[in-house]
Amino acid sequence: MKLRNSFSLMAVTMILATLPYISCSNKQLATTNADTYPTEVPEYMKDIAGLEKLRTKIDYSKPEHWVSLPQKPTKPVDVFFLYPTVVGMQFPTKICDINDSAMVAGTEWVMRAQASVFAESCNVFVPYYRQISLPQPGSDHMAINKFMSHFDATDALDYFLTHLNQGRPFILAGHSQGSILTINLLADYMTKHPKALSRMVAAYPIGFSVTKEWLEQTGLKFAEGPTDTGVIISWNTEGLRNKNAFNMEVLPGEVSINPINWRRDTTYAPASSNLGSINNTTGKITVPGIADARLDTDRGVVVVTTADTTYALPAYAAPMFGPESYHLYDYGFFYNNLKQNIADRIAAWMRK
Image (tube, rainbow, N blue to C red; front, side):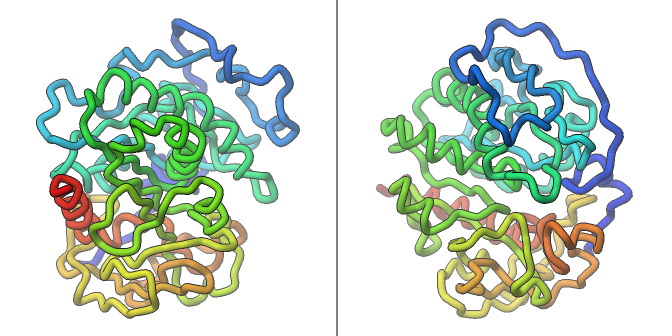
């Protein structure tokens, strides 16, 4: 069964969907972000619409501010997952409301095609957060997302660890914008809360760069194999034509791991070893999976050669992602391998 990159159905859910901005009235929330909102907005944020929304803190004690909030957790491990950009590209770049209709609709796809990979092993906690539409080409998207991470993402993680997690081991995970936020949470929150960090089975900020420099600065460790714990696991997925091309998700010094053989070297993993790829639209799984994998250790990415190029981002995305980026399938190509790896790392943690 062949997977298809259906942009018609995913128009409201994918990072490159061109959507009219839908302004939804935000509910009055209990407190303000006086402690994190700067007295002077940084220059790189001044062209962002909706900054005033961040002055108000989201009340994460309210169930409506969670995409997924298990009422009676049954698994011994939790996952805290931050979804990718689902409000598309907008002009100007905007911060959405917590109940933005496009974002709410987009999270339905995310739960089916991405966060579901954790469901067999974990209690899945997914907060709504006021995400930013795709930053315009040439903007400092790293600085923009670092600024954004100090608000909803930090508040949601703090509420999760303080009130919901109940001392269980946990995983942090995300994709794309959600992974940038996760990377910033690891650096700016988790390293300052060592007791919580000691319970982190692993972090999966997939679809954005974890770099050698960042690892050195934070003291955090990247995975070396399939079962080490307390580590970071990440990759960006590209085709051969992206070699040397600009990709906003790929930074100098990126570190990745092969999501089929879980090696850090260039050992090739054929598609026959792929345990299954998920259809982003239907949620159906093809076994064996459609993607092979080899690390390009110079560029720091996972290179796929067996998938049809229709799975790549469309040509109009090339200025931002290169001519053959498989960003939408960072999770999907390797879905069953990732599901197995999550279970394996949890089992290794429980044996400690």
